[in-house]
Image (cartoon, rainbow, N blue to C red):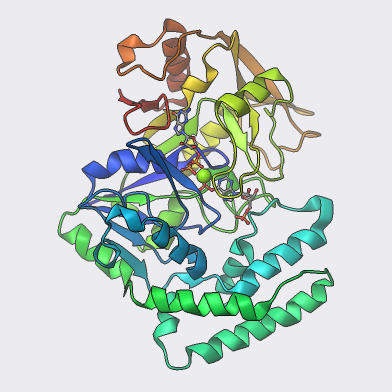
Length: 423
Ligand code: GDP
Ligand code: IMO
Ligand code: MG
């Protein structure tokens, strides 16, 4: 049985959490494949919003199994906090949540290293969420990391101390003043490790292989977005994992030839949080309205997200890198009342206009080329079928489908589960 993938096509926060929650009714298993608590996935139903960081977004469905794959990095403290927060919802975590023994652990000193690195970079900082993501993936590829399965070993505390001491040496080299009490951080870390030990720690790749053999329906949930991918994103202003489709193979152990549909999610405009180039970024009333109406504040850090027009150069690139088979467009409702909608169709460069995503999209190298469409006035948030959409909104959808050469199968018109229109 094939595995379907769901990925963000922009700089994250496209609405992945909402759509995974909506689609879970069609799947037996939801599996997160990369990233960690830098992610904030929001889902809303029964009037309540939930933000998940490490737990997959299928957790609220009674029958779905949720897997945290080997490609994820877990901060046991944040993870325990997430589970505690859901105590009122009668979720049987011991049965429904399975964790790969090969997933790597974020230690307290990884978070300190993240903070020291960002401080040392000054103006050139990445704008990291400061969750220790970069340093943890560096230890993984540097072959120094500690994995979830290690906490079951007799010598685990020695391994921990060895890595912690290495980190403390590195922190000294940064020569930046950080205030912290390591004893406090370690106390809560070890308490959270005991909590983690009581959950189901498994060989998740084997579990998934058996599930595929038994014809279970599996959806892989991505975090971040394609433009934050460590290879294909706007390096160095990226995250430290493979956020694109290939990351689902390495982050879960599924074979590339068993990937089925690839769902690509994008907003009807663009947002970015943190540093880095953003050709269609707006600094005017349109951008301000997108941020205010779209409530564009980070689900993890609360930072204001930068807003701008949709960028087809970037979207076409993300569709190709991921092999997207179906698109989902989010937050069209936010653009209601705009007198016009601008769409970036190419970049102007010193070599003329280009339509591919180049090595650098820094402002000195590319300027967006726009086409314009008419806006719509109607409120979309109560609409339940495509036929109710204003003609200008339908024209926007059709234009995007034609340009992107991929069908838009879901149009979301609000944060709630119910505000989802299948086409
Ligand atoms: P994720 O990281 O991709 O899961 O996305 P986030 O949860 O970080 O950000 C998406 C935000 O938009 C959340 O606050 C959602 O509740 C909200 N949202 C999702 N879809 C829609 C939509 O169609 N319209 C509106 N107005 N908000 C939406
Ligand atoms: P979800 O899954 C949006 C951004 C950070 C920063 C850069 C590196 O909710 O879409 P990191 O902490 O990974 O070292 O930060 O990546 N970033 C995100 N932006 N959504 C996310 O996740 C993000 N995760 C990381 O703002 O610019
Ligand atoms: Mg998010």
